[in-house]
Length: 216
Ligand code: AMP
Image 1: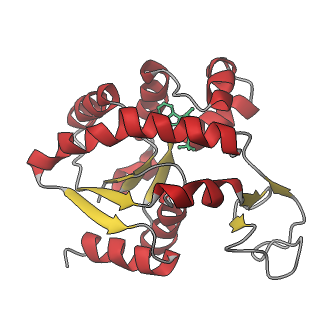
Image 2: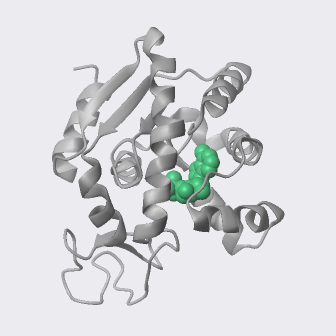
């Protein structure tokens, strides 16, 4: 099964995608993670993307579609993927249609995580991850059980995203409102759009997504 998770930054797309990876063996395709890896590795794409990402703006459609297209050719995604953070513009939605048609991959659902924007700044500015295993935490909502120690792997190294600050978050929300939200109607005629209340707890959101995937 191949799906898109769509919603503003902080809606919980990454959290839900990694749950689906654990529970269903689907593969999370986060263009943000791919770009952050390129920035860290200082590749040509990374060097181009770094400043744009730090401003909270969108990287060019050509660059992002190029890295996604290469990723879709790898073996592990053939049994099912979750797009997290792509498509983000009308041009990307059209490019994705063409890519999936060319690669013979169906799109089963577009699941929108509906959230209250007022809550997003707190959600985003408080989040951090284990630098070693990638487990996600939050200053208010999910502190490590032992202060300063990762619950999953015991690491004491944590990191925060460079763009998870209040000012950049406002720009990222603006980009979502202007460029990403308008692509949802693109998928309506196919009858594959579903909406989930993203303000509910992680478990309740996850159950709602599972029910959609199970056709309930
Ligand atoms: P995310 O991890 O999805 O919040 O993405 C972090 C940043 O990476 C965004 O603010 C953009 O600068 C860039 N980015 C990620 N995915 C895309 C995309 N599909 N199109 C353009 N820029 C993207």
